[in-house]
Structures are given as structure tokens and as C-alpha cells.
Length: 208
Image 1: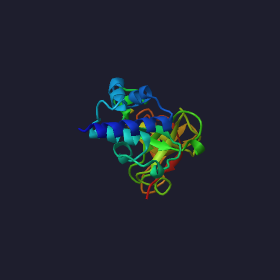
Image 2 (image 1 turned 180 degrees about the vertical axis):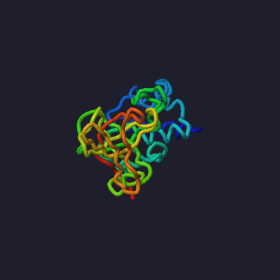
Image 3 (image 1 turned 30 degrees about the vertical axis):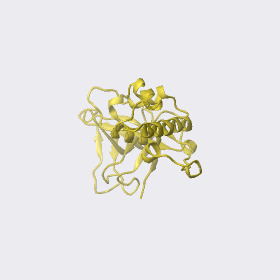
Image 4 (image 1 turned 90 degrees about the vertical axis):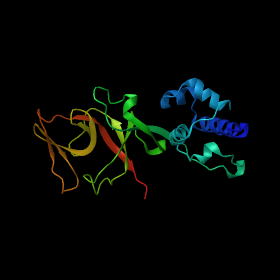
């Protein structure tokens, strides 16, 4: 590993940290990487492994090359201010929803149109909410313990191990989780099939 590559990585990493207003300590904690390791990258003493480079690129919402290659200042890609929103993956049994083990990365979104409150991101899989939410869409969730009837929510099923998106319908004392796709049947919530609402779906992004 040449010193030049380490220096380029260090310069680009410091630049991205400054752009996002993130300290080395914050990034180390968010990515579950030892702070000394991050410090050595920033000082150009060591060079990160490919998987760590990809992790940082995802964290900053940039291309890998923006960390590994030297860019002339007049060609520096212009990136809008974004904030990292943790992506919720599979829920580990016994862990709280917000446990680090349950997050698979970060989705970066402009704060301009985001609501207040604690936000999570859930990737829609399958077509049960089609055409409202397409398969693969990144759905922004505002954490809250309940939603109004007719709103779309992220809910936990199967013993609090599986997160899914469904429209919540309340009929008297009965709660239904209703897919927008009529090809799927509603789920009846009862003592034999309990669910837990994670939060309200407020926005989604989808790349063509």
C-alpha cells in the first residue's frame, strides 16, 4: 500500500466528515468501528479494507471513488446536505427495535421535507403495498406507538422478528392490517396474532 493512497483516503475522509458536520467519534460509533481505527485512517497511517470503504461510502451517501481517488477541486461532485437515517433490517429476537444489531446501513435523505421526530428507514419487499409503495422503495418511518385508522405503518409480526408495511384499519375493537394490493388478504390482529406498531410511514424514495 503506497503512502500516496493512504494520504488520498485521509484527505477525502476528512473532507466528507467536515461536509456532514460529523466527528471521527460519531462515525466510529455509528459504524461500530474502533475510534483508533478511524483516527488512523484520518491521519493516513493505515488504509481501510474494501468492505469498510463501502460502509463509509454508504454512510456518507457517496461513491467509493470519492474516498479512494483524488478529485481536482474544480471537479468535486456537488452533494446536497443530507442526513443519515438508519435502515431497519431483520429484528433479532430479544433485541429492542433500535438495537444496533437490527440496522443494516444508512439511507441519506435531504432534511428539507422530513418530519420531526426519530426516523428509521425500511426497505419495502414484495408487492403487497403496490401500487402505493413499489417493491424496493426506501420508506421513511417516524417512530410512534400508534397511527390513525387508514394510515400506513411499519409493524412487527411473527413474535416481533419481522418488520413489514401495512395499512392499519380500525373497526371498533378490531384492528386489520390491510395490503393495498387486493391480491393479498388482510391480517386480523388478535391475541393469537399480536403485532406492534413501530411507526408511521411518512415518505418513500424509489430509484428507477
